[in-house]
Length: 123
Image 1 (cartoon, rainbow, N blue to C red):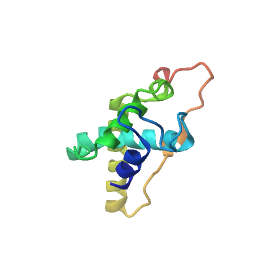
Image 2: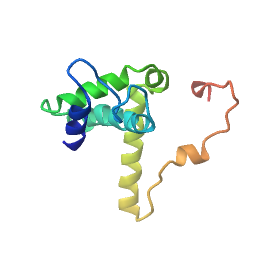
Image 3: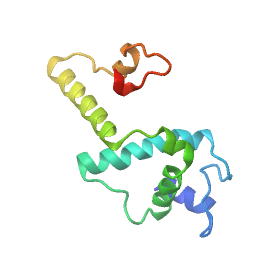
Image 4: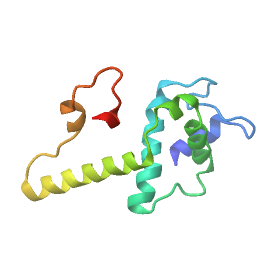
């Protein structure tokens, strides 16, 4: 709710701007965009959750961010977001039943060494 109110306060009906109120992409936008993307995808898939219609400013901001070239160039497919959340859920469930600590970011820490021009799909 507060994020929606902030976006309403910095945007006009004609112009959408970044979270800082400026016309340039900032670190806050870069931090928020993947979180909002995951919320949008995983929320719908696992919990049938969608941003409430009364949060129109937030939805417009998300559409604005997701259409930015830097975001489009770095976004992962929806299937990967769902897969990642399934893995996290699986590890949490295992830690509850076994009493072990959940594995977080294990893939990033112990992932295979990649050559600079090697694609993830080639692994």
